[in-house]
Amino acid sequence: MANTELATLGGGCFWCLDAVYRDLRGVASVVSGYAGGHVPNPTYEQVCGKRTGHAEVVQIAYDPAEVSYADLLRIFFTIHDPTTKDRQGNDVGPQYRSVIYTHGPEQDRIAREVMAEVTAAKLWHAPLVTELAPLDVFWPGEAEHQDYFARTPWSGYCQVIIAPKVAKFRKAYSDRLKKSAA
Image 1 (tube, rainbow, N blue to C red):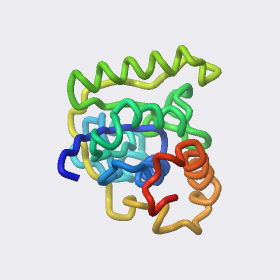
Image 2 (image 1 turned 45 degrees about the vertical axis):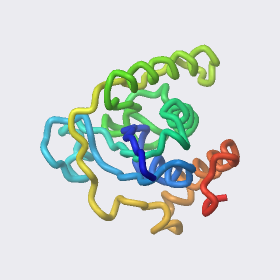
Image 3 (image 1 turned 90 degrees about the vertical axis):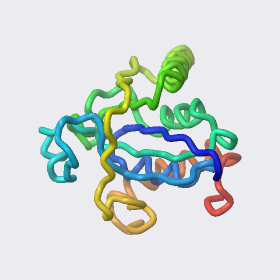
Image 4 (image 1 turned 180 degrees about the horizontal axis):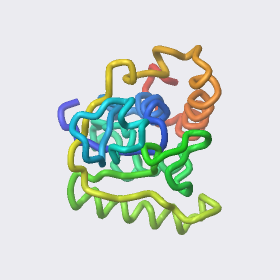
């Protein structure tokens, strides 16, 4: 992909977002990592300790000619619950917050528009609590957190938590899947 842009999103455990966005046509790469905190180069254990201020996020390199930033966000709002503060299901803590880290004013504008669209459509039973902030620093996560779903599909977390989200995404966006995921 010749012309890629970046999107950085947090919607609970980064393994879930990673698994979904890897299947989306127009996505060149997905890196699980951390953003929004105050500790340089944090480890997974530090972030899980809830004292670094970081969220688990994915950084998506995508081709805007294939998939728009707005569409990345529309998918984001359907694959996690953006109405629960610091929580996704049984995953609880500030590292699991719903957050969009923008890469400039245009992304900020689009994010606000999509959030208003989602709110107006009443897709959720409660108001959005998704944070919106400019990206300061993205720290890639450890190797064992990259492409976790594909590498460990037999694990309990993958079978119970991630697989249903991936299935929901594949059903809702079947026309947007990479050929390898279809």
